[in-house]
Length: 229
Image (tube, rainbow, N blue to C red; front, side, top):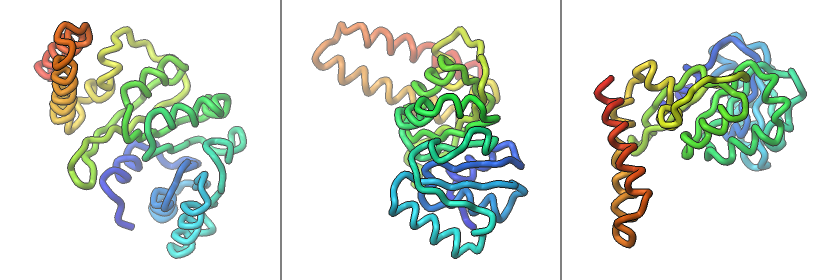
């Protein structure tokens, strides 16, 4: 099966083999790939909506991996029993939706060995929420989207305490920086450009707004990080 670069990066960050559930699986591409290319002993794919669920069922049948992949219809982690799998993947959703899924079944999430997350937006606030709620980030990767218009972040986390006293590094991605992740400079440049655009919009109506000073300070710190790289 040919996967997009984004989905390949999600597979790459997984600690395999494992027992795994792909939440919000959509087309079931990741579960099918794992069934065909890994020794995962249990693979579950779920979706909250009936149409994507049916598409996943059809794709799994067509790939002839129905004996390896179980498809479930249901919302978030509610489709799982406690300690049923070691790993959960939540990908292709916004950061707030991912937070809601984990928070709704927090006890189950805290029993997992690893959670792989790929937010389409809101990665910075998601990271902060995770650390504030007793999850530690063990790895992070960057990948450019299919149309090369955006760089996405992929996180692997596990239950535990993460000692980090610099909210700015947490916002950028501590493991991205520590590992000098490929695409990091491009990602930081995109972030800088986004902050500058926000500053310009604020300055039109409120040139003395404190948010401008805050963003200027963040841009200065970002440049320091780039120099360290």
